[in-house]
Length: 209
Image (tube, rainbow, N blue to C red):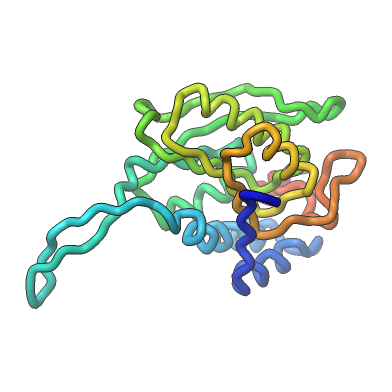
């Protein structure tokens, strides 16, 4: 799968395995997701541009490198994307945040938009779209479609789990958008859920059904 980055660090895989357990509490699921998001942020931002600044250490003057967090935008696909967003903001607190509200029509599995809010002046910004699951790919495609309308400098898509069907769909619609994920699972079931998966990420984050 071209342009798919599998984050297979042992800590990531360990925490993902714990999250898959059906008997895991809501509190533990939420905590593990935040920790995973923090770990994944290191890989997702590996190519983030930096700029030199002069600083004073306790001993002398030196030139160091810093990122411009204000040029980075995390875009959360509501509602489950909030679980990843919190962890990423702990690592890059200066990032701007956007939200896209989408829900999946249970009959057609297509994405229906109900909310869209991004920062201004997107042309010079790099966007990281976050959603725990890349299942059918419909929500991811709809989100990237809308984000491209405002013309950001770049777009990446980050998810915890992906299905081969979702990866194929997103790559077909947006081959220029790299996908970062902790695992590509076996397949989708007839209801559009990832197998073996971890259930409905939104319900497990917020304790709903």
